[in-house]
Length: 119
Image 1 (cartoon, helix red, strand yellow):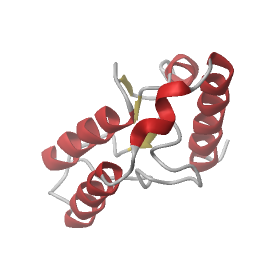
Image 2 (image 1 turned 90 degrees about the horizontal axis):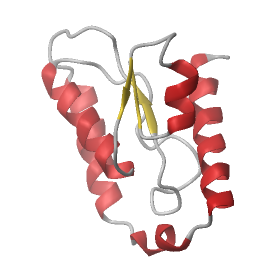
Image 3 (image 1 turned 90 degrees about the vertical axis):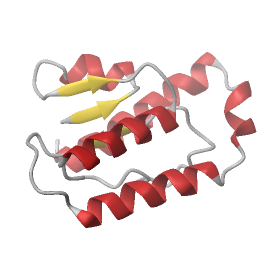
């Protein structure tokens, strides 16, 4: 399952993978991912993967398992720490990005996701 707030990712993969679109920002994706992990889904990609810091991009896509299982404590630890790390960043950089910059960040997020999917 892909959890994303990037409409490019959603539009490209909604018919191929179980894809959940989040209306909101980076943290909203992390919180929804945390909720799913607590339900028994397992993280398949790291929520903070990529060289772009959370305070530099408004877009994030995370891959989790399609099926629930037993609570995976490694996934819980990773997502909880990812949310704490996100909260430690100064988010003022995101406020003044242009439409062109938003498109660039969407492309970067899509590329990182596709590298995880080996596409």
